[in-house]
Every structure is written in C-alpha cells, then in structure tokens.
Image (cartoon, rainbow, N blue to C red; front, side, top):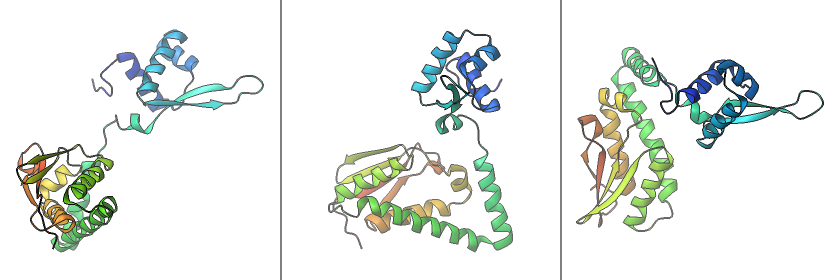
Length: 214
C-alpha cells in the first residue's frame, strides 16, 4: 500500500482525507475515522506542530465559528510529483524540434540567472571566505543541503542534493554550466572534484583560499 506519512497510520488517514475532501472539521474527521473528538484533536495538534496542517475559521450564523483543518504547502510536498518526467519529456521535445543548440541556450539562461541571484548574496563580501560562506547561504536558501569545510589551502563546498539530478544525468551541459557559474562568481581556479551525476555523494567544489577572480 502506498504510504504518504509513515509515522502514524491515523495521522496518515487524516492527511489523505484532507487531501481528498478539502478542509474538514473535527466532527467531520471524527465521523469519518470513528475516533473520538478528543483523539482527533491530539492527532491534529501533532500534525500542526509539524507544520503539516493549518485551520481556518468559518462563520455559521450566530455563535462561535467552526474551525476547518486543511493541509499546508509542506504537507502537499508529501505527495509524489511527476516533475522529473515532465521536465525530461519537455527537454526531449525541445531537442527533437529545435536541436541541441536550443538545449545549450536554455542552460546558458539558467547559468546567467544563477549568477545574478547568487551575486546578491556575495555582493557586499570582500574576502574569499566571506564570499564562499555567502554562496553557501544562497544554496541553503534554495533548498540545498550544503556543507562547507576547510582543507589545506582550500575551501570545500559540498552540495548533497541535486534538484535536477535526472535531467543533469541526461544533459551534462547542466553540470558544465554550473561549474562555469562558480568560476564566474569566485574565480577560474575553482574545481569540481566530485559530482552526484557521476555516482558520488555530493557535488564538491574546491575553492583556493588565495583565489584571484579574473
């Protein structure tokens, strides 16, 4: 059986009900799941603490408003999405109708957007160390799991997740232009020692402490 939430079966049922039916009250959930209102409240409190549900007040004439519980954007992320397949199909269609040059152009656009956005995080940084930490902050703000360490005369920036892994595995231009962007931001001596698409655990960028941006 497909499971969206593996921690507690009852909470999973609540999430699935809210997904299928939309906002529901405690009484609605109690009837659907044959659980007391107090029991439903305890499960809802747990889900609310995890940021998976929220509630809205709905007026029903005179008296206290009814509270309806609904899924948050965080909860929506629990459900599988077919983004990878959609993106891959889209790029295959572009390649078929417009050729590899158009694919290359798209990755150039992405590189330039990345450079522009990342520069906002390092524009006021003066030292190499400040710039590298600023770049780490940028990646974390974009949802990457990033780690920064020092080794000998280098900084090592590791990115442990790739949001376009399947696409980058098929179109290595993505990785090539990503490295180009690093060089543009920090200097031409930046190297990528490891890449997730090559089977490594992270994309690891090596940045010399005495790098000269050219």
